[in-house]
Image 1 (cartoon, rainbow, N blue to C red):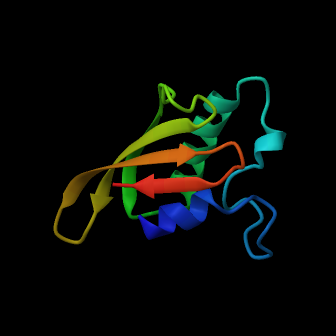
Image 2: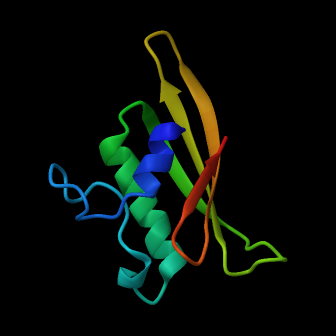
Length: 103
């Protein structure tokens, strides 16, 4: 969960070692920002978090009290030496581009 938090709060081109690590800036998204972010989250996790397999990201309905926040649910299998465990994380990005991750 900690790695997902750091990954989602890192903007692409911020790190010299892996310029594609993280997510694009919100200002760089196209006309369908929630779907663009959903795809970017899935691709970034699949590329940079090998402990998670079968990654799926869904856009969740906005919160009634704050429609400017975008919510996603990440479902995957945590792969360990002994087994694969289903995991689910809820994520939230606010209008400033700050992410929260809970699981």
